[in-house]
Image (cartoon, rainbow, N blue to C red; front, top):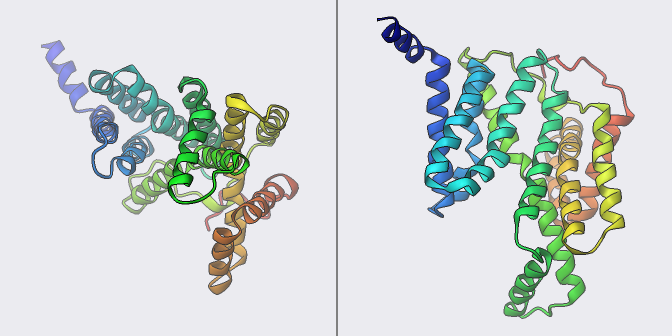
Amino acid sequence: MAGAASTRQLLNDPRILAGAAAGLACAALATWGFRGLPLGTLLFWLCSLPLFLAGLSLGGFAAGLGLAVASAALLLVAGLRGVLVFALAPGLPAVTIVAAFLSRGRGDLMLPFALLGIWPAVASAASLLLGPDGLEAALAASVAETLSGSGVAADPGLVAGLVRVGMAMAGATLSLPLLVCGVAAQRWLVRRGLALRPGPAWRDARLPRFYLVLPVLAALLAWVVPEGDTGLLLLTVTAALLMPVFLQGLAVIHRRLRGAPLVLFYVCLVVFFLPVLALVVGLGLFEQFGRKPTKPEGQPR
């Protein structure tokens, strides 16, 4: 009788129910992506959404349980490699961001914001380390073949530049699905009165002081070791670590510009991508580390 009552109590715990449901939803989305089904990439990057919804409404235990359930299910259908991909890309980042956000109180986004750069850097490094040897050479051959098929001369310098820029951008953009899913989950829960924390001032998020050391160190190492797979790995890690700084630069521009000037900025970003990208990163660095905040971080927008 006591065992049956204990089982009923566990089954009635909303944290366990939400965590198990989130884990099964994550496993289904990840499997859809791993099998290459239509919209598989998009659905895979939505894997963190169920974990954010469970964690931000019921606590870190629910999010952690969701990660465990999803990993166990994926181990059966996708193997250990599938579990590692899921855990490093959407799984562990979502759970740790939820835990950091809930533990620091309202408006303190320093650690969650830093994790938006740290986890994509870790995932990028792991993907390159676990990938085949000579990855840069293989990518260069593929790019050269694509350029030749399009009637463009496959200059070695151009090919090498495209490979390095493409890999750097791939590493940097890993943080975007986490950001979108986390913000969307929090806003949805706040509107329905289900969130454990009030909605923070996202655009006023700041990075901890120690964070500046990480991209600077990675950039210096990438500059010292510019060739081969190691150089490509360091460049990708640097780009991933700079992504939160770029997002902060975008937030500053959105606060300063409205209407037509903002549209013009994005046109310039597309046309003059690398120079404008560097400008936005520099603006984000100044905003984060060169200027004191003008208002409390928890103040609503």
